[in-house]
Image (cartoon, rainbow, N blue to C red):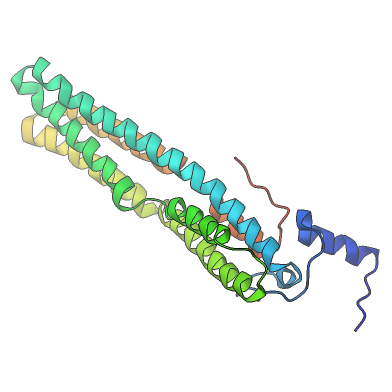
Length: 228
């Protein structure tokens, strides 16, 4: 069968394929919900695009995780270091700050962004052997597409309303603990307000690039570069 493309068709195909050049049609299946034009893009090009996007966001995620984790941890250590230099009646305020900081580090350890691990895992899988076997390429691509979707869902979950509510509830609890328990309302309000502000800053600075990457991929827009 001979394929004929007019000037409009050629231009459209160039937009879909982007920097990868013309592709072999039908190399790998298109995931459910994605634009059918992806079928015209070579599986290797799709795989490399996902690898680049996940690697980029994984790097951002590592900076975000270590930056906030070390910063909060340092604040907690600083609170403990100040304890010997304050009056015994005020030490509970500094202990509360240290405990709050320790709890603040826990999410980075127990529930890190999944892309931080998935990006290097996919990159290592691609580097493990040549991409000259169509069956292997399609198997890797199917896994990469599932990973891209899962990482986008993880980033949405990490910014859900329940995360904001949990942050406010926890820091309100710190304020009430110091206020009702020890009548330290001033320090309670300061601790609670500062903790809530830092918590919201953490949430709003979390990398979310994979969400946009997934949307671009599903539109077959492999020209999409995102933001750094």
